[in-house]
Length: 453
Image 1: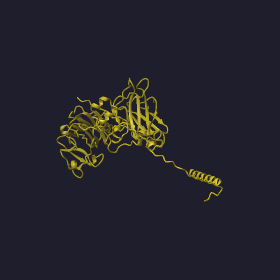
Image 2 (image 1 turned 30 degrees about the vertical axis):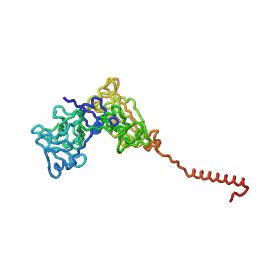
Image 3 (image 1 turned 180 degrees about the vertical axis):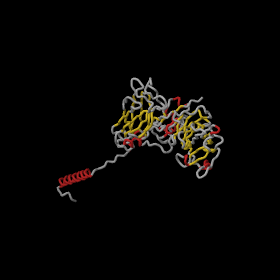
Image 4 (image 1 turned 180 degrees about the horizontal axis):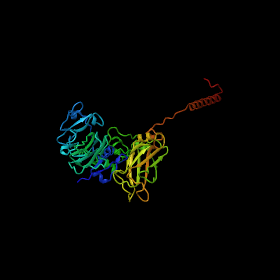
């Protein structure tokens, strides 16, 4: 039996996992975490949005109904979960673009099959994820691999569909040859309909290895055999021009390379910012009815995404238990939902959020940054002895000493041209006139003449 667990936490753009999670199936309800995990494990992401008329043009249902038992596109044969049904695309199912995918009819309830669709790849797959929607709330979703209907992918209890597109996906490094998305709440008397769009998937034999060392780029970074100073899950040696003679080579970038204006082997963007860290200390207690907040007074604008590191000692075990986090009322995410525990004995629970630079700067807008942490109803603020607490550490990024003018370019790469004010120019002209007069007088004394020819 496969054990499929859910992880959806991102640290500096890199998925937080233990080492074993890189070799076992993991379910995702966060597309950013899913995409970062694909990069981290070196898989090449392929996008399917159902917009290619060459593949999907025959199954457009807009002003008419056009279906087919199966459609092959980008290495996957898509079909309904029921062999008695067909698939089609329609505008109402789309998240982006003009078309989304769904089954017609919706489900085969007479044979015990709820609404859904499946995909059969032409080679071993390692990942599939997409956006699912319903117009029949309440509804739910399950994802099965290789026909194992007894062991759906575990999404940490977040299987409910709310009536807006939601992301669901899985990465299984061992691979699979069939995936099946199915609605879970429908009955023959209360049928549920689901729709989908914007899938991302990956095949086993395709690997991101920019430095050609036979190891996935993300694992080079995890293993610290490559640096990633800007946390974009691309080894730094793959971002500097291949012709660079800077220390730290060889380099591998052939186009759209990062700047290294001073040829020191460090990407300029990593030289011009410095961390600016703010820590709350223990905020006591934390739980339902006892929210906590931490105020950073007049923080500077950040030049990169803000990292929020949390620790907690509380009864945060179980998928539903979590803390919702906002900055000045702008929601930035949830922590501890799948990585929390009840009154941890060895060390407090730890979690992290990465807040986009523009989100943070717009939320603060020149004022204070108030980081609010609100617990779900299941979290007892007095459920751990001697007392529950939460901490938050915020890391902003400000211009470094290498970029005193804050323009994003190392100062040593900029030619400094002195400027002269109007008063300075007047003084310079006056000095020239005085010097000329002194020369004229010396000539007059030495010749006894007027100094004229």
